[in-house]
Structures are given as structure tokens and as C-alpha cells.
Length: 341
Ligand code: PLP
Ligand code: COI
Image 1 (cartoon, rainbow, N blue to C red):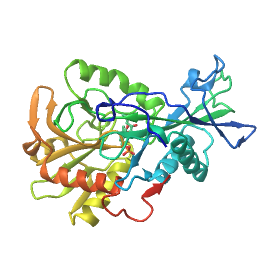
Image 2: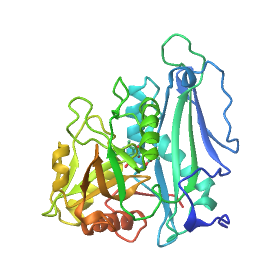
Image 3: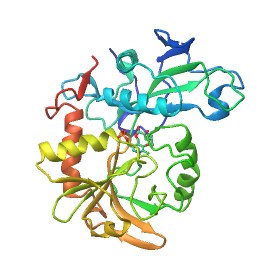
């Protein structure tokens, strides 16, 4: 298969329309088999549930070319599971988890020419999502839904490569008023757009959100979870019901413990403790692991010792091990890598 002629090493984190996507419709209480189609556009009624009550949710995962030249994706079963949890929270029908994985495989296979080559620094970002499609005017869930998956080749989410990020302690709360922590997409991201625009206008890369109730504990950022490394080399990450249960973070916890023999802790982290840490990073599918150099709390600067000019040494070890597993350089734990072709 011939690859597309793209400048793989200089791709932004953006949308490049590929030829094929997967579409399945839910009607009369059942999902159809779904098809691969070339039509990137969606035509819906003006009163569709997605437009009126934002009944929509998404997932995000990536496909990689391994060192051996295979195309694989990383733990799609966990995206299928999280989408099911999100769908239930939004009163949407669950897209069957096994069919989700099959559909991811089908879409990536159909777009194999867009999967960036090994070593290019780019990956194929896969975006499964679903929405209420029939007209609803009273406040209630739709009866009909569409599930789609498109993909797009992407470069790094944060510009500047490994240059550590500067983030601000946000005045905004992470979750929507009704609390949608476990919903990736829909309500909570719309509510976060103003906060991210404000942070960018002020020159910050991201927001650090605090717990909405006491505003004293670290939660997450707009598009990634936090990891911290203590001065004695322990991995610490926030425990909270209102942050997205990041698949990357869960994988890093395992890698730290089982591959690197590190001590790991998932617990509440007061903002006042952040200045004590040696390293800080943001983790997620898009962010992978991006180092944080500075956190600004209303004018007060917290400088992370290891991270002002480069990725801290332990963060780098975690990054190398995680991406090594994803790209086939390091043996993966059972079930983490789904081979596509
Ligand atoms: N938190 C938020 C708000 C996100 O948008 C993401 C993005 O994916 C994550 C965390 C990381 O989750 P995952 O590692 O499953 O991609
Ligand atoms: C992802 O990492 O998959 C996300 O959804 C994050 C988003 C900011 C692109």
C-alpha cells in the first residue's frame, strides 16, 4: 500500500480529511451493521437532539506504525468501555464494545495510507463519536442516533515539541454545572472552551483545573490528566471522580510500577503541594506525556525544578517506555496492542 504524500514530520495536531469513515445508525431500538463511507458530511434535521441539547459524546485513540512496519492501536477496548459509560450518562444507547473495536480496525485499515510511518513523530488520531439525530424539542433524549469514526494523521498536540509547558491555575471549573466528569465530549468540553481561549490569550498553554467544591485540589487540564514525580522518585497522580479516567494515565501507572519498579500513588493532591514535586507532566492520547515547566497561580509562579528546559529524567523514562510499547520496541502487557494490519 502506498502512503499518502504528506510531510509526516511536520504535521500539526489538525484535521486532514481522509477518504473513509465508519457510520452506523440506531433506530427502533437497534444499531445497524454500519458501513464504511466516503461522505465526510452529515445532514441532519434542524431540531436534532445533538443541536438542541448537545447530546453528543466522543472518544479519542491512536494508531501507530510499529518498528516492524505493522499498524496497531493502543487499548481500544478501554475506549469502547469508556464510551459506553459516557453514553449511559447522556441517556444514549451503548454502541456494543466488540463492534466498536471492529469498527476501529475497519476504519484504520481503510485509511492505511494515512497512517504515519514509523519514526516520523506523527500518528493516526482516531475519533469515534455519537450523537442524537432525530428531532427533539421537549428536554429529553433522542430516539435515533448515529455513531461515526473518522481518523486524521496528526503531529504533537502541544507546539514546541518537548519544550515544557506553562499552565495557569484556572478560575473556571472543569465540569459543566451538572457534573460530567466521566463524559468525554459533549457538555463538558463546550463548557471548557471559554477557559482555554482565556488561557491562550494570556499566553498559557493550558489550564490547571481545581476541584470545583473546595478549589484546593489538583484535578486535570482541558485535554489531559496530570502526573507528578516526587523528589524521591515516586509517581503521584490525582484521584478524583470528576476527572476523565485517562487511559494513558492508567497505562503509565502500570508501566511505572511493573516496568520501572517505581512506587505509585493515586491520591488527592493539594495545590499547595505542587511546589514540592520534582517533575510534572500532562498525559493523554493527544498529549502523550508533555512536560510542565511552570504553573502560575494568580501571579505566583511555581517552577518545576526538572522541567524548565527539557523533560525531567523520570518523565522521560516513562515517555520512552510508554511510546516504546505503543510502537512495538518494548514488549506490551497482554491485550494492550490491537494489531490491525
Ligand atoms: N482528560 C481530558 C479532559 C481529556 O480530554 C483527555 C484526552 O483524551 C484526557 C484526560 C486523557 O485521556 P486518555 O489518556 O484516555 O486519552
Ligand atoms: C485525546 O487526547 O484524545 C483528547 O480527546 C484530547 C483532546 C484535547 C484532543
